[in-house]
Every structure is written in structure tokens, then in C-alpha cells.
Image (cartoon, rainbow, N blue to C red; front, top):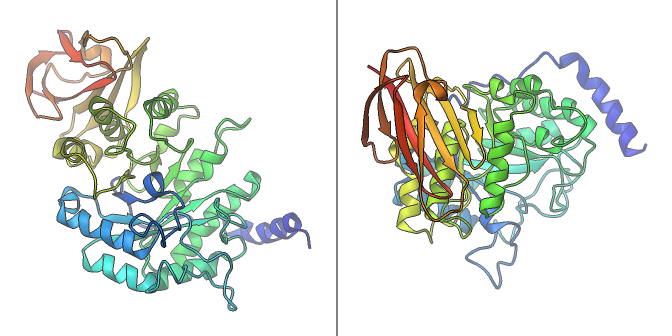
Length: 408
């Protein structure tokens, strides 16, 4: 039978159970951790590059560093494998197999090692016939593979969307979520479903996505550059389809990895990403090399005040409220009740910091007579102001001011 015909026949069997939704009780705040892809990609050359290849050694090392260097204490808890961990074919029992040279102890032992550190293990697969790098996908094998992930002690699954028609995604992605639930092991579910529909003629069904996935990628992969970061921020600011309204405890829009600590961003640009991922209630999944990271980058990633905004229990995703040439302003409701976090981003490349004047009411902040305004990164007090007071903010070129307004 032709693949597409077989696939649609398989889908017809899924339709009666579409009412069963994910609802697994996980990700009540955006997940935090580390993910291999951005920095290590599909390096499988463990002979000539043993320290950087996709292997159990790499993931154990990063798990160790999450604990040793204070990331775990800051909230980062997932160690996530991405593509290229598999052999190129399933075994005689039609099961997925970790590459025995690069993962000689197997995924079960790796997950035990990670769990003994007080951390959690994530793994990667693809909804299609093959992963993006050409390894076996999960099409037609969802229950088998979900159970294997559970038996291995996996805590999170990232499911990509290569090598499968996009019209199958509204059926296959929810079904994999149900398959994970049927294992009775809590496994966080990250979907790439809407990312493969971005720019298409029809907007993704974000309500269905939010009911089926704990987090979902909406847009292109991030690259190690300021232009890539700006493109993602602009996409989220445009908010086509109003996907921001579907974010909340258990379900998060994922703009992709934190590239802080890599090569492409200046110090101020790294602060922009951290502030924006916090204001957008985004997963904080670092894509860097924790063995080689500048102290200032580490400090940004572990900033308790910014992480607190990201992890705010209300789970409200921030929105862009002002876009004026090179300047954007975003606002997010946070705790305590009636408070707001806000960011002012300066895309400008002129050498002088911008002096920007705004009333709190300009930024959509209202409800109290006055607010205490603080700068989030260092906790410094700006002062108490009414919503009609004009406040001047200084924002560096390609930089950010992140503030919090607390009712008085």
C-alpha cells in the first residue's frame, strides 16, 4: 500500500478518540533546562571529536554542570537530547535503538544518571517516516515508541515534523500525546506542529495545539545571530492567529532555544533574549556549551529576578503594545495581583543609548493610582509614579530595559 494511503487509513482509526486531550498536569510554568541542538547539531564523530559529539558523555557532562555551576538551583532541570542519537534502522523487534557506540550504556542508564543528579531527561523524535537528519521516525509506531520512552525513564519528548505531510499533523500530534499518556509516565510533550505551518495559507489551530501539547514551536529554528533573534521577536509581536491567548499553565509558545553564551550576541543582545523570553512566558532551554561560557552570560542565564518573571504562576504571556521604528514595548501581567512586567527593546544601532519617555498608561499598565517601578535585572528602584507620569528610560543600542510595576 502506498505510504500516503496507509497513513490516511491509519488516521481514520484515530478520529473517534480526538476528544481525549493531553492534560498531563505538567509544565505548570515554562520548562527550564538545556538542549543539545543549537551548539552541537548532528556531530556524530566521536573518534575525532569525542568531547563534542552527540553521546552519553556529552549529556552526562552537561547534567553535571547544571548541578555544579548553579543552573539546577536556578530552576534549569531538563537535559535534552536532540536529533542523531539513534541507529539508522530499528531492531528486529521494530524498536528504536540508541547508537551503541555513542550511547554504550543505553538510554535507561543515562536517564538514571540524570535522575540521580536531581534532573530530568528529554529525548527527540519525529512524527514522520524519518527524523530531520534521516534517522527512524515514529509514524505508525507511536504506542510502541511512547512505551519505550517511558520504560527508559524519559521525562520529555520533543517531536519534530520532517518527512510527513503537514495535513496529517492535526491528527498525528494529538495521537502521540495520547500515546504518551497511555504509558502512565508523566512525559512533557514538545510539538513542532505549528512551526511547519508558519507562512502557509492557513493559520495553525492554536486551540487544538494547546490542548494537545505542553509546548510548541511556532517559527523557524533560532540561529546564533542578532538578526535571527529579532526575526523571532517580531513574529511573536505580530501574534498572527492570536496564539498568545492560548499560552498558560501546562501549555506554552516556544520561540526556541536560548543562545546566550554562544558566539553571535553581544552582552546587551543576550540581555534582550533573556528579557524577551521572560516577558513571553517562554521555555528557557539553553542551547550552549556549559563548559565554556563567559561569567556575564552565566549571570544573565541565572538572574533570579528575570527567571521569576518567566516563571510567574499566572502564566500570562506578554504582548507587544508599542512598535515605533526601532523601539518596541511589551507588557505582561504578573504577581502580585495587579502588577506588570514590561520590556523596552531598542533595535537601533546608533552609538548613543536612547532616552525614551513613556507613561505607564502608554504601556497598557493601569488599575492602580501609582506603581513602584523597578529595574528587573539588578532590582534597582526607579521610583513611585502614577500612570500619567512621564518616566524616562535609557536603553542601549540593541539593548533592553526590563521593568516591573507594582501597585502601591
